[in-house]
Length: 141
Image (cartoon, rainbow, N blue to C red; front, side, top):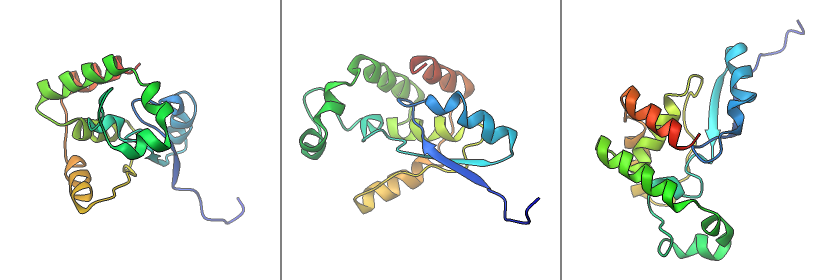
């Protein structure tokens, strides 16, 4: 023991579309009793429902067109249906799924408008039943 403050949380990219941390980071976080703060949880907004193969904010199309070109739109359509069946938005379901993952303490999500800040805060209060959480996990496995 060096007498140094201990780490209390870890931070890494984690979303339904980027689940690599489940293999090593999240188990280590659990083992050491840390919290986890996922960043980039909305995957460029793809998990909010604001994009489709032919529409969406022009900024992403200009700055990172490869994100939209490499997107599995059938998977996102299936996700939208799960969300609709659960009576929640894709944003709400994405936050709820992340917050249901063991060590996730909070979600770091960017916002560019006051409306997005309010929507993110509201999404953080959303809870999903286990059946819906499992369906989402299977879809993005």
